[in-house]
Length: 351
Image 1: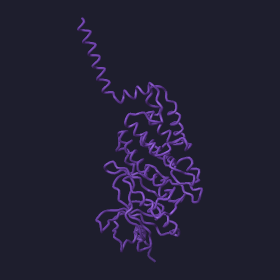
Image 2: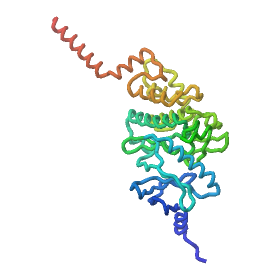
Image 3: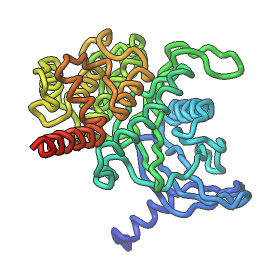
């Protein structure tokens, strides 16, 4: 008996794992990545002449359950038509029996990989604002993401931000035109590394560092938009510092933001205090103490970008004067220069 080499075995396994797209409009080009449910392939749509990403389910003993999850993810994405959410183009079953859906192929880099390309704080905050817009739209449609993190955000060549991987999304209320109720319906997907998952009403879904405390305790039917707001607060902290907040760090953020010594613009961690206060409010352990809506978090970040006071950071007189000075520094310096020159001229004229 002739034994097959490891190289030959690997080629055979790769050929067996390759989806059979015969009879479809797609031609496989290369694999883009693997998750718990299957593989995402780069493919060419022969009818429209464009590249798409195919998410193809693996054939396993649990295929029927995974098929339902994959199809549900595709249906959720199909209802979320927003520039910051990757659109679904097609869904179906391949000749080999595997379920798939086709979505827009996003050319860009994950936020955690792209961060070094965004050196300016204001540019990072603008990207965060775009992320919030997509999440706020999903919330308005009754959908929680439940696994927001930098690895699930794609940044395109022109700075566009797209929220990816809705495999563990939760539907709070009906979103489809058919009127089907989807109250408290859960999708459990082990696609992303670091995602903890248990099925049932005590499901734990999310990623440590970005998962709200109530989400980590289980009880998925108790979650609302504020669970995603916690994750957005962690993403904001990541954008500011380059690292995810740990539990001990979030406690420091809250204490530092709450202390607000008069006249100091930055806390002990070097973060502008208004931004630290925004993070602290979004990362509050008690959901009731967080921003109530994603739009409220967006509004505070927009106020900071515009040099206005933020609701999370009540200002005393000294802080207000300093903020106004920084916002209108050029005008203030010009006026002071003019007044000094006038005083000097008057003094010499009297001499």
